[in-house]
Amino acid sequence: MARLIARLLVSSLACLVAGSFALGARQIEEGDLLFVAQAQDNAITQVTQGIDSLAIDHVAIMHRIGGCTGPLYAIEAIPGQGVVLTPIDSLVAREQEATFVLGRVQAVDAHQSVRSALRYVGRPYDDLYLVGDSAIYCSELVQMCYVDTLGQQIFGTIPMSFHDRSGRILDYWTEFYRQRGMAVPEGLPGTNPGQLSRHPHVTIIQK
View 1 (cartoon, one colour):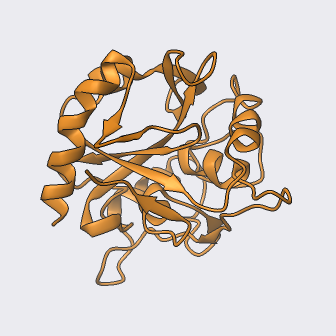
View 2 (cartoon, rainbow, N blue to C red; view 1 turned 60 degrees about the horizontal axis):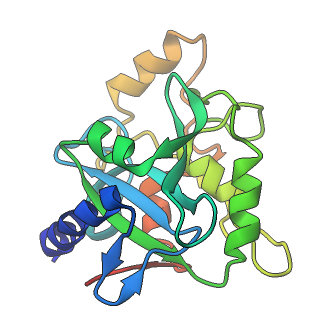
């Protein structure tokens, strides 16, 4: 099932480059989430869980500049650049080995959420994955910005996990934080793309 969804969605990404992501009769909507699923596990996907066990390690917010007929961009937080607006064809080209999953957030004020995300463009990338500071990582951007019609956040934080399924913290993360003079922030509040892909407020759009 996971492979089928991934194949259907990645085949539809050809339309993204042309500016219209169509799944059947449904058009991409402002504020939809684009999840990036890698072909192989990495240090992020080994300690998180994506929808249908996909190796999801990134999420971006879909935004059309100039309305529903305008060019399609991703609002995303990426290492080395921070929070940026990326043309969708550039994102697809960057992630050549990945597949993509489109999620639609339910019970959301999509336009207000996107406006909130746009205000963070230019912020640095948070490679420590800690909430509450000035730097931002990809799923943190989503977690902070998505609100309902009353302005309340839809996505809460969860205890961060840096351990594998056996409960052992990966050596990668131990060394990663050691080099930064920190202990692994296991259990501190955070978020991750895989968790967002499985959230009850996110519906995966299928053909």
